[in-house]
Length: 398
Image 1 (cartoon, one colour):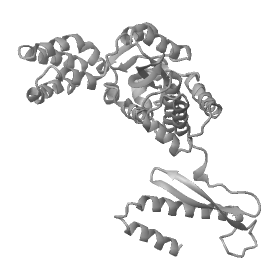
Image 2: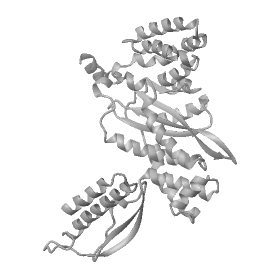
Image 3: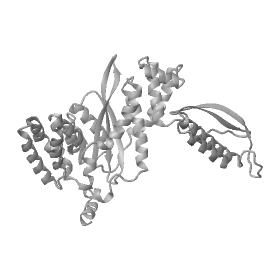
Image 4: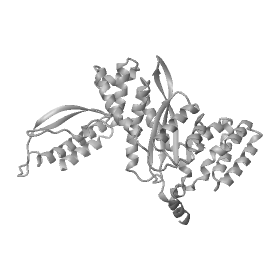
């Protein structure tokens, strides 16, 4: 152990070396393999012990591709049985999905130069259609099961946001809206509820998507938080009889577009006084007052405010403990960032199925992380939104 510590210290002291991260990974991988093999053999390397189960029998070389570069591993072999390092277990679902999409684009001959380079770097220059098909089927089975699972319980809040990716359709490259829906149930847990792609933001598209969620069991939705997507407000009202909360952050950006850059700080300060109010009634009154104060100098901004007040302040009729989370689609920003980061690697998706495959795999893994994290909202704050009269009564008496 002392020698191992000295080796690690030597690596850390090489702080200016560009290969430091790779060296640290190689050191950690070797130690992990030594510990795992020791558990398999029953004794440290070279030690005599009555508890020994088997002996080492040389090594086999294997290259390990990491974000820090290639690491050459010497994997121990055993006289009896076999050993494979745990950190080289099959790739996670999202990484496999990314690989599948890249390879699918490659074999269809529609990938960009960057995708060609990535396929070759993965050793996939000779990939066959049957190999890609098997990989896609394996991923699709998991993703489809996740995206079609029954939705149980009551979900008072539903966030919906869209990010745009490029995909091939009928020989053309088109922009496709990729929709992600996230809900919070009365147990305070967040879950990814659905993923869809589409070229239109008209009401029929949104209605079909929301209806698919309802058909899987989504119920109890009281507030849909989204940007000002065309048709979504009407679809949410028809499918769930829910209120629409227009993303406050996006609305502010739209509003400030009607103000000259040098005068925006003053306009922002005035608009922020609206959201600093303690009640919905006070916020509505302050909104009207600010709109009237801005009307003479910024008529278009005032007109925008006249038509957006109910949608932007809808969140204020819900428990104050939730205001920071339900006023905007910011809770989905990290998810959209992950989607865009992977989409930038692809460049152009070969088809809609590839989009859902990759985004669905990412959302599946995010859902797994949320399942073991703490509640997104407290049970006490959600009790007043429950349709259960017992829970509502406990919230009132608390």
